[in-house]
Length: 53
Image 1 (cartoon, one colour):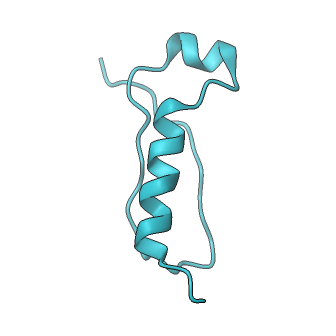
Image 2 (spheres, rainbow, N blue to C red; image 1 turned 135 degrees about the vertical axis):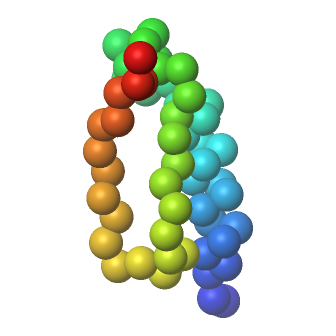
């Protein structure tokens, strides 16, 4: 059965929003930001982007 990548990414976004596995991060994060891009990308870049104040 083929994987629905759009649906999978929605699930990933939901999991990120409720994740509490990193207690120190949970204390200081305000809004987890999900990037944009192709659903079938072969590479995912994960980085840190602080608030602009």
